[in-house]
Image (tube, rainbow, N blue to C red; front, side, top):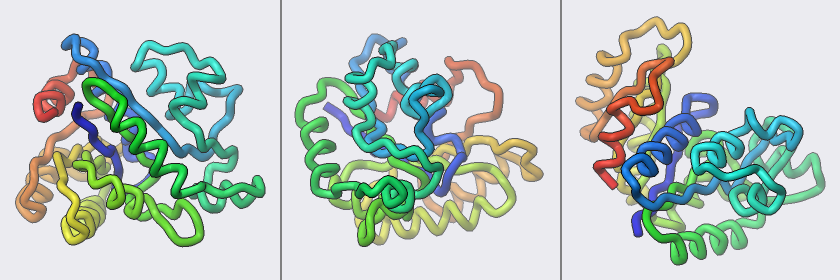
Length: 222
C-alpha cells in the first residue's frame, strides 16, 4: 500500500483538482485507490456536488450518501474559514488525536494507493495549537505539494518546501496548477521552482482534459 498526503501552499490553488485527477488516472490504469478529505470547511450538504468532498467522491465513482460523506470527511464545518475558526463558530473542535487515529487506521487498512488531502495550506490551524503541518509530521507520509502559478508563488512555494524539508518530510513532487489570469509563464515558473527547490516539479495548464499526461506522470511515482 502507498499513502500520500496532498497539501498546498495556500487555499484555492487546485489541490482537490489534482487529487481528483490522480484518482481518475489510477482508476483508469486499473489500480486500487482510495482518498480522504478528513477536514473540510465551507461545507454545504445542499451543494455537495461543488464541494471538495463531492469532487473526490465523484472521482472515486461513489454516491454522496450521508454514510459515504462521513467516511471520507468526518470533520465538516459550514463556515469557509480555517478549521479552528469554522469549528469555533459551531461550538466544536477538531479532535487532533481522533484525526490522527482516523488517518492511521485508513493507512493501515487501505489496499492500493491512499490519498489524504489536507485542508488549505500547510500552516492552516486545525485547533488552538496544531496546524496541518503537525498532522503531516505525525503521519510522516510523502507530500504532494500543489501550488498556483500567480505572481508571488515562487516565494510561497520555496518557503513551503523549506519548511517541509526542515521538518523531515519527503516531497514526492510539486504540482504547479495554472492560476486564472496568471501574468507569469507557467513553465518558466516551474523551472525556477525546480532550480531553487531542488525537487521534482510538474505543471497543470488550465482547462485540461482528465487524461492529461501530468496525472500519468504523477501516478508513475506511486
